[in-house]
Length: 381
Image (cartoon, rainbow, N blue to C red):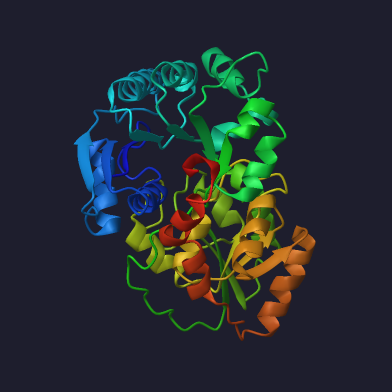
């Protein structure tokens, strides 16, 4: 009987709910029994997306601070994560696999030591923190020291400790910046989603081409180029730009560019159902990340677009290029914003939408398909 403990010491409320739900579903297809440890508020969102937990998953609560955006909250959460991860690695039955859904930097060295002591087979899932191995952002001293586990050559990585990233394109990039030991323990599985959780509302008829940016509107996501793009077409009665999601920016910048803020979109997080209803009113979504964007992490918002079956217009970057190679085209890949302007002008002239096979895309990016591929990796050999 294959058993695992799936630990999420990071998420509260709706944070990363789609990835959490789909990865939990994926692992439930691999194991006969899973003990699922997470905050109650996170578990409730997972229940909603999965329409209840699979029968082979048993939930146990972890208490996490909901004020984790403050420094003291983040520190407290890191301490809880470290204690929780180490406890289960050391005390669970030797035949149980440990799945740690988020890499908490402070936990890295304690996890390595614990796996050495226990011999427990452990999979640590890595996310956006891996970009700090290259970008060297301004981070806390303890974070920088902890992340050296990935790069130092004089450290022995525990025999049964493995690391996972979300997609082969990310794996190839990570392999270039980690030690040989970590490289040998690195696997990938695709970020997936629980598709078709909400009925797709019909698109309202419009004489305009409606283009939107989905997700958090901030500079790291390409908001500056989005403002410039919208401003270029400002006054054109045949196209409209919208923003769908959380708006931390001043509305003055948005209004100045002529961007429409749909009703319900504001400075607070938006419910998934309302966000989907608004995405369905778009003709295309745009992704304006720089070429180096998403070298080390997957995009969550693109799965919302796929779920709503809306084609994309995106600048080339490693991750979206990878998705197109994996799933086939579901939109247009563009080399720069000038080419994007020309593409939008052509689409204004010819409103007839190309047909993309979103059913196939959803099947490839399903937990069921990812589970089959994950079983082929070295973690399960």
